[in-house]
Length: 252
Ligand code: PGA
Image (tube, rainbow, N blue to C red; front, side, top):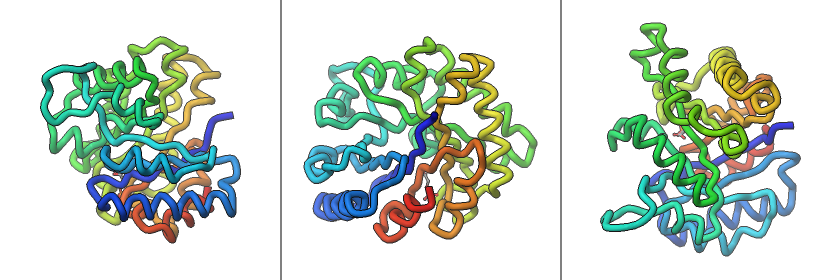
């Protein structure tokens, strides 16, 4: 059975104290109420990782970075390596978020290197794919996502691919308050699973967690998560408010 996941991407929000406080509140909630069979992942800024890990003691919570460098080490001022991230105790990293693709111009080749280096250093990638509004309006969403998957992930061997989590995040739904309808999400998630099936077979496809991301809120989480191929969410804005994020965990 594939893992259900509620992941919170904090982006560039929260000071260290605020972040530790948020992590504590989520940890307390999961300690008290459990998370059912879901995994909770917290993705704070790099410099919060160590302190967040100190306050997380529930085995159902994992900690993730939001990005990693594509080189192992060296003279890359301002970068943080996968090895450094892993050394904090974090076990995941988001790769290819649309903000990295669009604002920081990370292309498919760069993202493939990041996927490889993350996996080589024991980090599980949460690999993001998704189309822009223009691409959807032109009916190109499937082609765009297929391309992102094949360039970023499908070079991996079967046994390595099993470590990957996929997040479908339509760019037009991120931070806009406009989420995909459950039908739009399901259609794309099924398409993604079919691509994985074609590449790696039924068993791996069935076991791959595919998260939806883009304006998830307590009010829409349940219907999105009830779709058969939606295995959870990558949550931005609503993951910053403990009362909202815990509702989203409950909805899973
Ligand atoms: P949002 O962000 O929930 O604020 O739309 C989602 C994401 O970018 O991961």
